[in-house]
Image (cartoon, rainbow, N blue to C red):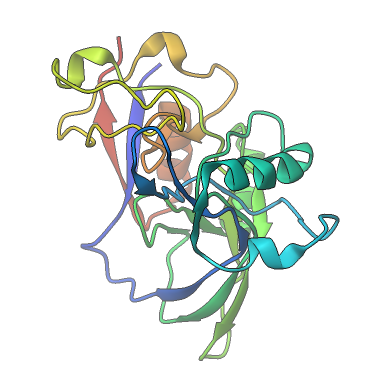
Length: 237
């Protein structure tokens, strides 16, 4: 199986623009061990409804909290997560709410860690047998008529980079908060032993801003003429 990294097609004629935020989120943290204040936020679970959780206001404002408070809030959220979900500081939940304008392609990647799809494109991909596609509603206000229905693809974090593409002098992750301070390498290589056999679209667990798809996903998009993104092949071993 061949794998590809997905990025937005900045050379296309699509003019779509989106601005907003997810309805809820975990705070960033202040780690007592490594002394870092950090929040990643590329792990998003738009299918997760936090309304059963008491004190929803704790999840509505972006901020940093002591690690113990972050862990307390994480445990309130954990029972509501889909199987395979992984939490991190800044993880977000619920529908993306905001405004949009312009012309959007079938696939939309406003940021490297974010992928949306038109409903009709999602249905075509599912009919082709592409696995692991879960489209979640967005709450977007458009400034034009005949606006598209854009669905937020919920991407589970699975798989890792191969150690051979990482610096040999990298620091280990913080044993207390798990923070990985090694920047994303320029040349990526996937660790084949960690990649899922049941998903054609996912994000990496260790570098969750990286969205990965299989050649099955790429072939389906090309057969169906679904554009708006580009596919960069990645080695795996």
